[in-house]
Image 1 (cartoon, protein in one colour):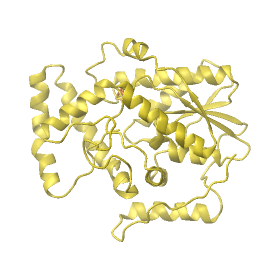
Image 2: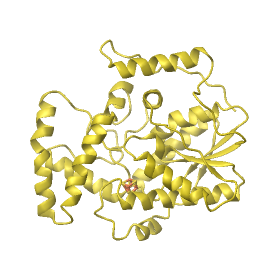
Image 3: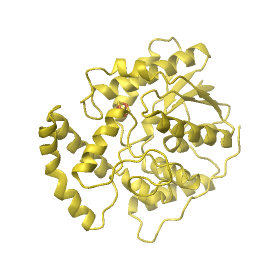
Image 4: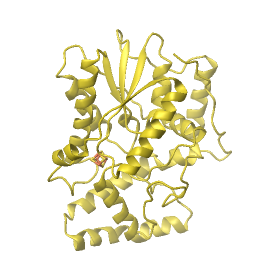
Length: 312
Ligand code: SF4
């Protein structure tokens, strides 16, 4: 167990929106009272296996969990969906480093990408949050639940639940289904997407200068994001290196980063993604669907709105 210093991260600018100011005040209040939690884990839980997808998504959740008294948390990295391998290694090593800093055990599981491709066959053109994502969450939660069962954990949870880019109901359904196979194993669900958690997540990301990934993870999300960028005149995603395709390579501004994940931005992205997916696998039809958004994004850029372009 480690002692945590609850630092405020970068201070908010004077023109910070109301939600960020109140989230920051609630964080400060918790720190002043010497606690991190609004609520603890369900009663009787002593060992939690936390499936983690990456360091930025895991920061605030790991921090909360290590603050639970009498509870042991172990981070479980199982993400064969991430493509290419170089991006996978970057996300994994960074997550490992963060756990080492907090003295949290890190389990490095398989990279069985062939199984992932087999399981998502026929869903290559589905949009994010569709059937392919259900399979992707199911596969990762099943493996997490199996490891938890074999190693006598009481509960599992996943950092996929912290991102507003993910449908939390879809994520939680996968976790609930996976633990149903094992007597006594619990899926620990709660709302990890609050303003407080989102702001804290980006404070930790900026403090640790985490690598800023630019897409969800699989080769299909990489393809779709690049296709959308091309149609909108935005540079391609860059894997690794010191330069990102768009914006900073490393997290540095918690407020701007949290804004990239505001509910409005996320809703708009998925509305567009549904329309492009409805065009099917015809390149011409997809291009036509993307054309609809070309000027809207261009106008926003000209008006100085630069966020909401990385959908991880
Ligand atoms: S878009 Fe993300 S959640 Fe969906 S299948 Fe790809 S990696 Fe998995």
